[in-house]
Amino acid sequence: MVICAVHVPESAEAAVDRLAGGGWVMGGGTVVMPLVNSGAAPVTELVSLRRAGLDGVEVRDGVATIGAAATFTTVGERPELAFLRPALRTIASPTICNQATVGGNLFVAQPYGDLAVCLLALDATCEIAGPDGRRDAPVAGVLASGVAAGEVVVAVRVVLPQPGTWYYHKAMRRRLNSAAIVTVASVTRADGGVVASTRIALGGVASRPVRAGSAERLLRGRPLTHEVLTEAGEAARGDIDPFDDAYASAWYRARVLPVHLRRAFLP
Amino acid sequence: MPSQIVSLVVNGEQREFIAAPGATLLASLRESLGLTAAKRGCAQGACGTCTVLVDGRPEVSCLVAVETVAGRSIRTLEGVAAGGELDEVQSAFVDCFATQCGFCTAGMIMVAEALLDRNPDPSDEDVVEAISGNVCRCTGYRPIVIAILEAARRRREQAPQEVASR
Image (cartoon, rainbow over all chains, first blue to last red; front, top):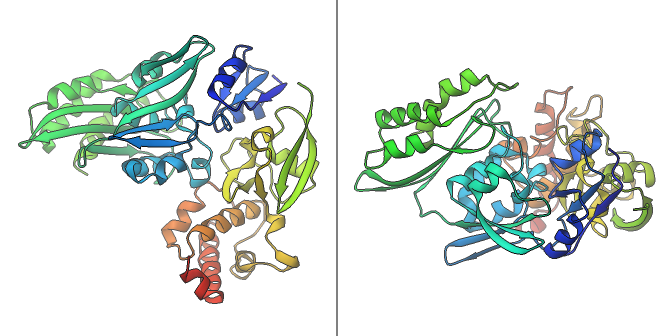
């Protein structure tokens, strides 16, 4: 369809008002604009968040509140969020990182959207604005079923992981900015040599980022050894529903999952 | 919504033009302002040949709806050669044979300008990462990486004090 209007509201509330008339929310445009350029976008109006005052990052008491329109570059430049830099580098070139936004990444189809995989591992909370006001929702829910029509994710809240508890590994065709074959992100805390708590999120292995609940259950109370991690990776095959694409077959993704889950912890 | 007047600061100059709804920054530069250095390659954000600087940072202009950057400062390749004289990056591209068909060159140079503005002494790997969103089907990339490192060296030699104070 041909775009008839691009709205650039100056607040989250104004964006919600605009959305009442239909159209798509657009963060940095890296996902929406390719569809617009090819005529494949099934909308005639866009609501850009570029000027809605949602591009900041605030860190207080160990909690980061990241505006939905904060770019990957903005996120990577915050010292408190430096643990995400290796992940951001695998997602996109520095140029695209200047445009792609945290909120937009929640709505990117797999095998893209690795920041969403990280946010799932971090058990992030989404702040959502809608016609009835604001509400919070776990990022898992937003990844699973999106937001209601007329709603906008305005921020993502993350409890910063303790030093030494963040793990990230991505298997891809190139060393930089390529789609995921398997992405593994985890917050795992060991105590006395065994896993005290763990959250593991996987990308590239289902239609959306998923938690590897089977692997998490297997790891609790056990040491992060080669054998235990391989066992957990094999168990994680029960948590995935992989697909074929140009990057890898579903068979291949399932086959290599245990290797990459292990490498996230033991490179 | 009808077309609207959009104002940008392009290469230091205030420019106003009429933009149709959803016009990209790339189309505006090329068709409304006659600045044709930035090229339309894939129109999907994957090739980088339309890269320009928005407030000093590289962006692929094919993915920017121009209304969303109204009032911002845009730098294109046309604004690089001060007084018609090639700058260090441009002359290094010539000297190091970093351009063949030339289609990627405008985007490559703008990414290099942004890199050297932030990092006057980049490593080989820094350069590779900086141009990782720009596709070149002629050179095999190596001459481009060498040219950007050479441009950095020339710029450091030219203004050692200025670089040291950054």
